[in-house]
Image (cartoon, rainbow, N blue to C red; front, side, top):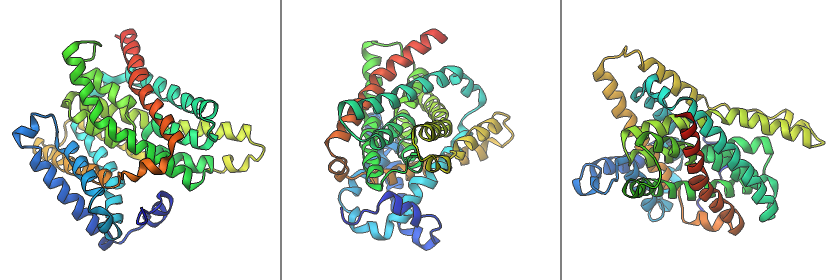
Length: 360
């Protein structure tokens, strides 16, 4: 699509947008959010298990692949603001829904599951990409980072460490968008299917940990778990944020590996490491909320604001999810991402069941 702006170019242009440039995109995502919240209260839609966040991304995808190309030149900066900044602010405010008691319920189990899922997925991506599909190591590592940690954010954070070309970053981000979006609808279906047939011993809490440890993006985790239950959503977000905070040590390890394996060590040694500060602040907010210092009314208002921010981020994610992403990615990256997606569902499920069996 000719109107699309590359991720790297967008990142540079978006560093300091003027308020008036944000308005069209925020109005568009706000309108989609209002429609999603309204539709989310319709009984027939509620019975389908579709909440406001899921509806926001559905509406965003529909508009993104129909009318949005004409609106994109004016709206892109504001939509990107909602997709990136509002999402992070929404995750920070999500801490007001949680207490340390709930975080303790996830605890060491979530950390171990996250570590095993992350490491196995990334190494599988590197092995399949190079040995099976004959891809270059940079593309395989970028796709592996996106699938194993936190989606497009992990891809963008890994790019400067690898010194990868913009085209490889675009391909990796496309695979994350495709399969992460698919996960939003697959995981609630899997939960309902398992609840009917009792194949695996998943509770709402443990399934939330499963979703948080295996779905690509933070936004996609929120949307998928939100469709199941508040208990699943809380556990999923906590588990996902633990996984996001593993990004910094992951980048340090990759940088160290490159510095040892490459003759020219300067590129790896001088690379800045991205620290996901919003994940750290999220934990601090949850810790503050555990003391119940704020009035209940104010906390409810903050939670309402949080829902609006997250829904706007979902709408923005949908607006930027284009069918053309499948064509841009090509066959081999799509096949690799497909196998990783299957591994996250099946292998991630096995890891979750084994760890929870041992820890409980």
